[in-house]
Length: 225
Image 1: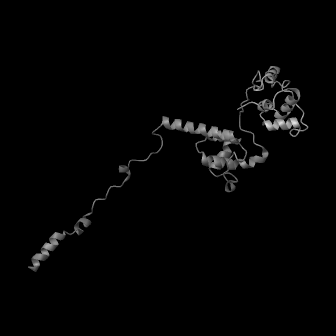
Image 2 (image 1 turned 45 degrees about the vertical axis):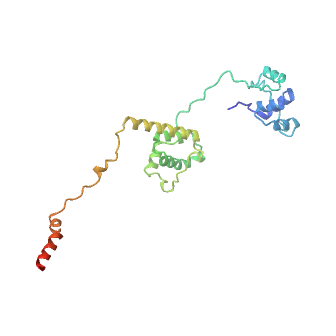
Image 3 (image 1 turned 180 degrees about the vertical axis):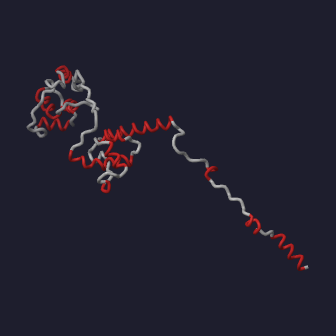
């Protein structure tokens, strides 16, 4: 993904007023359409917006501006920060706004129904809930169990689609790994020969009831003669 200034319109205003860069160069650097830049120059776009110097904000160097002014085809490169602060990892359950906490049981029901491979600890971290609440939703002992309607937690705004996909992927990989390590674990289907019941042996009464037709007709012929 390309990097652009934090305030593209304000940066474009400053570059138009203080440099001789072309509209295409300013548009490419700020992530704008050339017609937008032309509108900024004409005052039709960004009217009243105060220009921001990208040099003082350490987003562009003077050398880059000079290179662009000397070569109309040159594309300006945004300055990268010298130090990159790593994103602080979040520990513990996710914070959920008060206005959305009432929707958590519905989200738990959705995850439990559609992704049974996800562990309770993962659900608790994803939705900012507790294992006790998750268990009550599972066994339908929750105080509002009769009114629960499973809903996608992403649609409810309780988590992002990326976070949900990540947990689903990890849970599926863990489950596949366990199944590969224990292929004989759990119930399995028996062979057909073991499940089909054998044919019952004929009883004495059924054997006695069977009549040999050839003998019957033979006896009938002898009596007629």
